[in-house]
Length: 504
Image 1 (cartoon, rainbow, N blue to C red):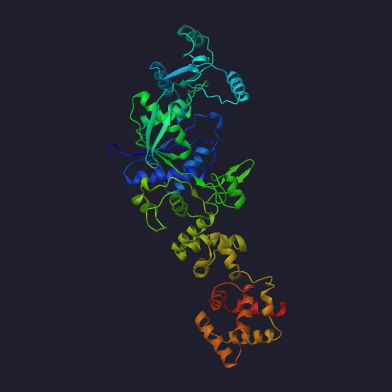
Image 2: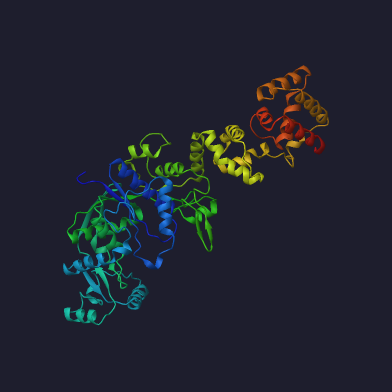
């Protein structure tokens, strides 16, 4: 590569960061790290009408949580600052004026009402209005007006926008790192607005100017920006600048049906589409962090949406991803979002955590559910976690999987209660006597003594084990029965057996 790799993530602060935007940020981050380059964050807030308070802070917090914080951004290593476009307002004006001076742009005085009227007239004739070479010489702009008429309008303070003068009769042969060679006919392009009447640049102008001044080497963005690629390349050419390399990422698709993944899909199917919870006066939208996903999980499943390293490997650390990431292995077609697979990923990362770490995460959940403010014995929690974590995708599922360790059952599964026969109370009373006589109350010893008693008395396994589990758990579920007995202890085990005898 001829120049140092510098890539950016440039979101607009118009609301919470969608998971598709997170993947774009991730791929930029991985490309930068793979090539020992720089990943920077620029906030593109030129559209002040869509600005949402708190969105900028949300974006930064999300990237920090995921472990893909930018090397440069607002308040951090501001080598090419400011990194907020609204603070670069005066800068863009001079570049818009430069395009006017070189004949690559022009003033357009058309009002929104006049353009809307023209658009409707053409629609009635079955035609589509497009502001370009086909009609710009007949519209209210500096190409159709004399220089004197144009200057008069400017002097009188008439509102105007600055439009790009798209060249005609040209076929652009461009290269996309992911999609290969693509062609565009300039006659089909419109003359985009570059500078608005409110004194702010549009996305197109600000984006090009900033990417150039911030020395961006590669523009890695979503495929929805592919139609803008010819305009952006033409702008680079108009300024006499070298264009960066472009790579347009495939869409993240709905789990079911066709089209791009949306918040509505998440609401309907019960999964988040945002990295962090987003709260507004109208309500809140759940985030992956609050749902119990690990940041490593989110990074891992997003990396595999539209990319793979050419092997069957599915679990990658962030460092491993950065070592093997290659834009040429990004797919052209969209990738279906799979919420169930994402849970599977989280389970894999949960299983990699130590029982002690998981127990510390679980401690607060137990305290909240039991109402016990005093310190909960961490060794007991660690042992419980080791028995139940195989069945969990998230730490917040631990309580449902283990509540019987902390509370005696208040009810008994109706279907499982059919295992409670006429002779069961007498057998459970005998079991209580056996348990009372055990001094070394550990799982292996209890199991050996109870099974020896059953064998010596020719008592079938089902007659004891199922009613015994039902008495302790309230259902026929849970880990090894004698591990449960050891953890809840002799007194609690006997108390639950007595309660079951009375209740059932």
